[in-house]
Amino acid sequence: MMKSSVNNSLVKYYKKLRDKKYILEEKKFIVEGSHLVEEAYKSGVLLSVISTTLVSDYGVPCEVLSEVALKSISLLKSTPNIMGVVKYEEKSEIIGNKIVLLDNVQDPGNVGTIIRCALAFNVTTVILSPDSVNLYNDKMIRSTEGTIFNMNVIKMDLKEAIKKIKEKGIKVYYADMEGSINLDNTKIDDYALVLGSEGQGISKSVASLCDNGIKVPMNSLCESLNVSVCGGIIMYKFR
Amino acid sequence: MMKSSVNNSLVKYYKKLRDKKYILEEKKFIVEGSHLVEEAYKSGVLLSVISTTLVSDYGVPCEVLSEVALKSISLLKSTPNIMGVVKYEEKSEIIGNKIVLLDNVQDPGNVGTIIRCALAFNVTTVILSPDSVNLYNDKMIRSTEGTIFNMNVIKMDLKEAIKKIKEKGIKVYYADMEGSINLDNTKIDDYALVLGSEGQGISKSVASLCDNGIKVPMNSLCESLNVSVCGGIIMYKFR
View 1 (cartoon, one colour):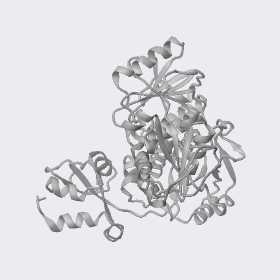
View 2 (cartoon, chains in turn green, orange; view 1 turned 180 degrees about the vertical axis):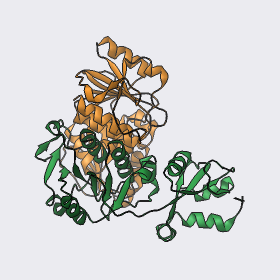
View 3 (tube, helix red, strand yellow; view 1 turned 90 degrees about the horizontal axis):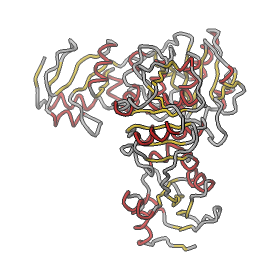
């Protein structure tokens, strides 16, 4: 363990780890705050911690840095006094029989909230289309509240993913206001559910590969639900 | 209708309308983009529009301003070519028998999403505690997708609100992981539901006034749900 309140090269290294290129090269990214550090630790992906005081709780190296140095690494308005360096693992296997697919969902808060729901409701794999938010996006990670470390989240072309899911004998649904299946009357144990971006919905080419659309019945005064709420309601029902 | 591509005093006036003090004085606020303008119009609260081209669709005055002027008024990264000046109405009456109360929920995205869900699932009044986000907060309004113009949203001390709700004979519940009522086995038509902030949950003084806690059953790997997803699931079930 090394104490270095003004270690410029280390600080530079950590700052680089906020950048896509270095995250992919180093296969590491930074999370901020004690809750995410704790969750990363519990999931066995915590490599080291960075803090203003020596932290020995996690059995991983701790770099002690000044508040100013920590602030320069942080992406948050109010800098936490602990951050974690976390292993970035690229996963590729579609596991289990409750699967959620996100078709170009860009908002990191929505993606993170959906991953959190997925863990709550026994989803086994979350698949993001290649144009969805990055898997180490800071806001997305924070919105998962650390649940991402316990979830099989992969990036994959959705057409390829749907083909593989169908080969497993699992039906693929998409959430849609015009869907022919009314959620009220439906309980499905094995499923794949495609959720689309709020602006554009699900792309036609993906929807055409699905078996059916599911609608969450609602008051006609409201045109649609937020994508994470819509997904959350369906996942709750099918858990 | 007045065409004024560089009307400084007008631009200044609109910029002031982004400020709490002036919103409350003038009882007007600004919304950005055609969707919110359209929704405000349909709900009868649109007073005028501001645009880069003359818009006569809404039967309200239109101020034509330059792109630069519009950009200076906008709070968004990408400035839309239309904004609306909307009537700010303070409401105070608790209407109906499906009521949602927010105890110090600060995140504007969550509050907006909850208001959107409320309209979808036949909630008649949404009550925000005085320390919750402001009712004209730009991000909150955007997250409602305009549904706020169709919803009875009021600010009120929650203890006072709970007293009034109980006088109407409606039971008051709060959402809580430790709640004694399991949502799976419950269907309630008339209800008031208190949702708390994500960090702190519901304040003890408010929880002590409620009749019961409701829990959304979930996998124990997940500690909690996002507040708008949790609220959305309960509102869907009780709609």
